[in-house]
Amino acid sequence: MTGGVVVTGYGVFTAFGWGEKALRDGVFTGTQVFAPAKRFDPTPFRTPMTAAAAGDPDLVDVLGGCADDAVDMAGLPPGTAGATLLGSAGDWKSVTRYSRGLVFSPGAGVPGVLAGAVADRVGFRGPRLAFTNACVASASALIHGWRLITAGRQDVALCAGAYLVEEENMAKFDSGRTLSKDGVIRPFSLDRSGLLLGDGVAAIVLESEEHALARGAQVLARMTGFGVASDAFHIAKPHPEGRGIASAVSQAFRRAGVSGVDYVNAHGTGTPANDGAETNGLRAALGTDTPISSTKSTTGHMLEASGAVEFVVSLLALLDGAVPPTAGHTTPDPACDLDYVTEGPRQLVLQRVLSLNAAFGGMNTAILLEQP
Image (tube, rainbow, N blue to C red; front, side, top):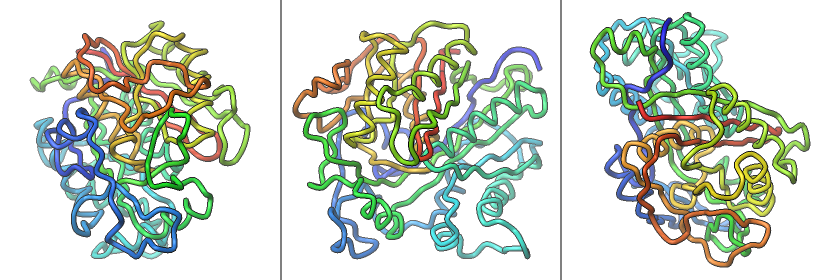
């Protein structure tokens, strides 16, 4: 392979609905659509609030639709020898609940079957892999796609992530006392008290630049670098100084040969532990001048899908020259003293953006996107 890794297509679904227009109209205006859950009885939990799309969509159908959109935008034909890489829940109960209608072969792992179903739907003939490492799962899928392409093992990778709000994970996060106790998410605010869950599914086509140009594809952006780090601090809490985030960001910069970015889409969960630690890590890696926002303030936390959906958000920011705001911010926190774009959307000339994700177990990821 010559050249780098480029983005040629995407499909996305959130609580705002299908596609990039819904995302632009919701996330980029700072609109919050949190409401009491209707798919299950939320009364046992400390908050009933989620960011969920209307009705009770089936995860397999929505994931397939996003994959169709991404492949169609990229202009790839059925039979493409591309990899299919999916980040989704590893918990069998959550996944199988949403995988009705699939044919399971004896001994098949459920997440792998889900990745296979997506590949079959779009006609991809390459390897099918599933990533189940919690809230960096779909970021890991994107990073693995980059690795496969730069190693010359694949020319194309369909990288996806999927999560729809359901009762089991609501119960788990409630038990861990990580849900916002007053049903409001306020990333980086002094009075933040926790996260809220949200629907999210996205699929992205990555290609080698050589392959994309040879077939005349429109290149939307370049994925120029990434970082992966474990802070090895705690099973559920980040290192207070944000060492994992700082390391992941520094790795991404070294890999891309750059020293800074124009915008950061932060992990920004709105929990007391995360936001302060992330601020410390970003200050160490970037200084204090870079615009940063948490779009979980509008979408909610989409768990395994966060990396993929926020990759699309970061891509749209790059394409539009628009920084989405951190919605819901109220009281400044002296420990969170960076530029969180709290006044509303901001128009800027963006050449390079960074998308961050973190997960239980101390995992941190950073992905760089640049103008083509």
